[in-house]
Image 1: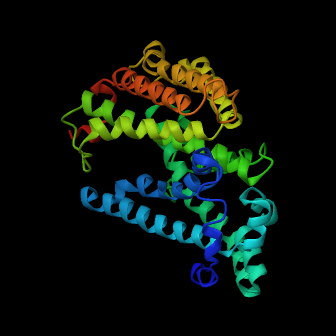
Image 2 (image 1 turned 120 degrees about the vertical axis):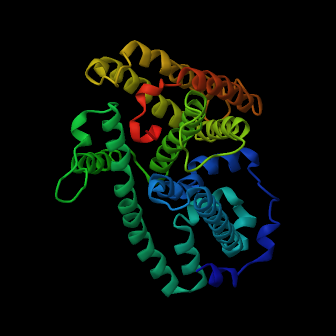
Image 3 (image 1 turned 30 degrees about the horizontal axis):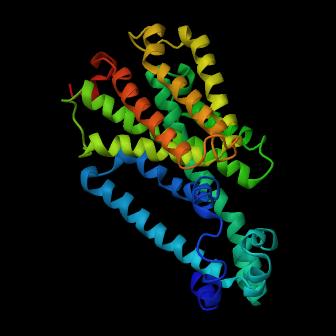
Length: 352
């Protein structure tokens, strides 16, 4: 598809109304809500299945960096094909802001405009098949997370049960299936769904550098098949970038997403006495995680006052600087608050 569309490029399209006519805000918003980060979330299974990787110190970076570079090249070519394939007269008359209305199904509509009907049919088939492939992949990785939560006591023990015949954590698999249906119900459009899902997953991944840094400090001698070098710089930077991507999703997404997280935190506290984690009492759990509430509330405050769907009282780039400061404070607070005692680590993790 890319090769065919690249053969119909209109060079004038790349000069009409200049580069990034909607400013940097349009670019950053597209990263969070336009499907850019959603596309890269396909790298998740690499991490979820990392436990089965041979020589992870070598193979994990190769898989992650290689896939990221290949995906980046493909997506850049797709964008070049889209920009160059749009009829120039439409851009000249109405500007790029109207293109989304005319080409609501971008590559399908461009293929029809170019008269390549068979390509339009192929795009339609791919649009129906691809989501099912994504669903199958996540149905294999999400139950692993739920199973891990149940095994550590973070979630009800029933979700840690494994079917003896198949070796599959069936309760975790059924919960994943039910949640996958539930989460599609409140969203009126694909764009709204992608914005929330991308933001939620980006934030969940942002917690990984905090956890890794906390474990590095509290368990320095723990065997590590994969060791990230330069963590003191890479981890806080990753958390700041993830926080900015979350912020770029806009107030309408953040208020809903983080508001739900606050409610879920309160629900966890309410049920916490039934979900005892090893020898860690509920009060210690709250002290180790209260930084989350600080982070949620401060990010919502900056978003409500900021330039991405907020009141605009805090203009760009000061709003994004505020997000970065909140993220850095949260990161170092979380790292030192979330360090767990060695007794909470299973013996096989300790290498005993």
